[in-house]
Image 1 (cartoon, rainbow, N blue to C red):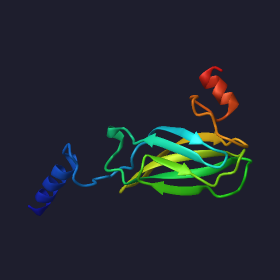
Image 2 (cartoon, one colour; image 1 turned 180 degrees about the vertical axis):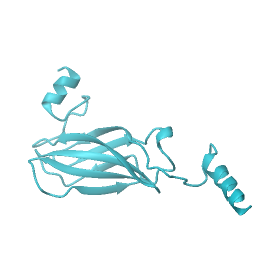
Image 3 (tube, rainbow, N blue to C red; image 1 turned 90 degrees about the vertical axis):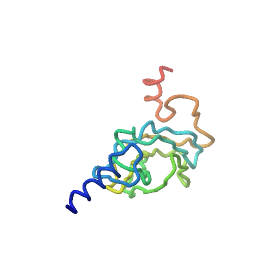
Image 4 (spheres, helix red, strand yellow; image 1 turned 120 degrees about the vertical axis):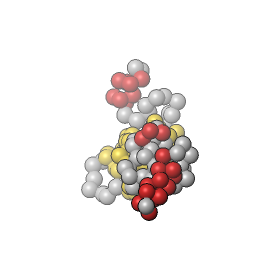
Length: 146
């Protein structure tokens, strides 16, 4: 009898439209639409949307951002940042270097897969964020057509 009550309570709390408990069994899906909102020669501002409703697999408790230096190639360890917001400014970067920014959603079941976006910081000044892809010239041309 106790098992039936527990199953009923779990079903009521975890399958209702308004979830009152985090009933995560699976990690969340990919964050949606990560983008660079702005950048200077020393920082990048990122934003993203949460995974789609059917991919959340519970209550999102935060986001993990992994910053990896890719240009120049290095053996430095990636930097891990955490936030509960849908945006983050990554400071203390090096002018002219390339980075990959990976964002993962997290529930009580763990961290989901990451969505990644690359960016090369300018030597001086700000990146033009009015374009759809202001990271690598060859990617810019292929995706934006100019």
